[in-house]
Image (cartoon, rainbow, N blue to C red; front, side, top):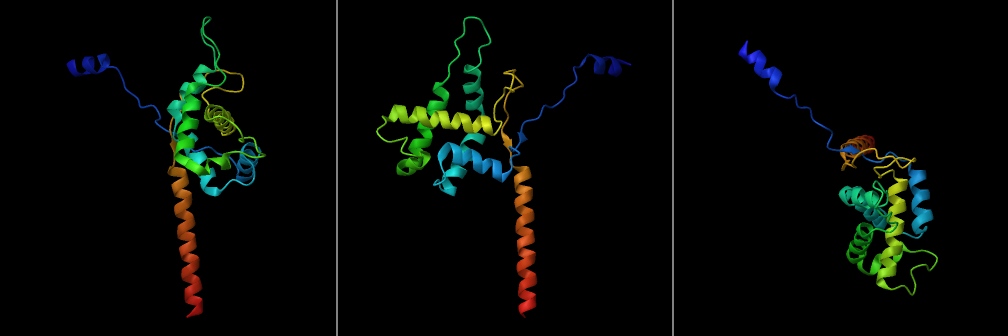
Length: 177
């Protein structure tokens, strides 16, 4: 009896998800986003760097998008947040001289480093929005904190491709013997 009473008093605990699925977007749509934002001459290495920069920095994205959405009367809506500018500067530092590939049609020429960071921050913002990496919906309603992207689905697909590739190579080798 005492055990039953004790279990009734103990609050139940349930686990919340700690990851959200990797952005589900077609290659064609992703290509259109990259081409319209960064141009068609961007390298695959730079595209992957951009993709993983936005998908791996969800805490920073949460802070950035929160500052863009006014929730209290005395708050100011900030369009270009320091969070995204800091991410852009870190990306520029990491890329070094290859950061010029983030610009197209000469848009990065003759800019100060601060203005260049603001331009890249704007592009990173649009990339995050286009990949649906925002805690707000289309009506600017808060949907909940962004969680880190799960790479499990991507790993499963990659493993399947590797296994299929290895089987094809094995069959090809057997046919040549």
